[in-house]
Length: 331
Image (cartoon, rainbow, N blue to C red; front, side, top):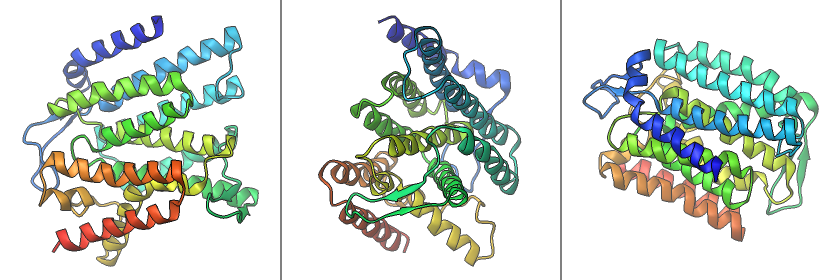
């Protein structure tokens, strides 16, 4: 009860001081005529909101482990402290990009350099085995290959989520869905409860164009979900690669399609444009309907595949619908 009351007070404070935070650090997203829909500058404070809730939950967890020896999913105090540091670093990477507009190449290199020690030093964060739910066939990876593969998965997912954050609500509702998934599976309940409350607070602000996630928020959320997807995959028997891919395939395939499209035009693959799925759909649907359709395309097949199997069919369905939207709505 005290924990719940504390996090509600925290979010009440964050909600009402949202604009003040933006003013103090001078962190806003300014409108332009190329990619953005908003007409006035909007505080890039969503990352601060998510970070505050994450740190509150993690510090609470650390106290519980240090003084009461109630170990959560973190097998050692070192692993928990390393995760706390990692969360701070990923927020700062995005925050610095929001503030100073770091070049895509510089940001890409910096994230790789951060991920290498995190992946190697963390417990159960290296993908050593590739296993699927629909076949007993599996692949064991040598150490260096597994480290490379883990970092590649992180990089693809972080960039996919960052690019996915192109319209109101989208990454917010996507993150709420993933938080609920972890909570329904009784996984690190304290942490994801705090994250969920923080995301609901953000959605309220986002609805009124009073806050955007910014790179600080999208990088942080992508790292958190990527981290725990790998953790739960390595720690349990019932989560397989195809289950995770179901939740990542739409942002991921949109990233790959745009990379190929930009490279074919001899452009920087990280160069922003308005060719994302959400931009294309926004030409035909309003903001709410665009979000409902995209979230449904991700969540419904993912949950059906997760609980009933036949993941390969649901993955195929997601891809077919995705490319139908691209082909028919972009012409």
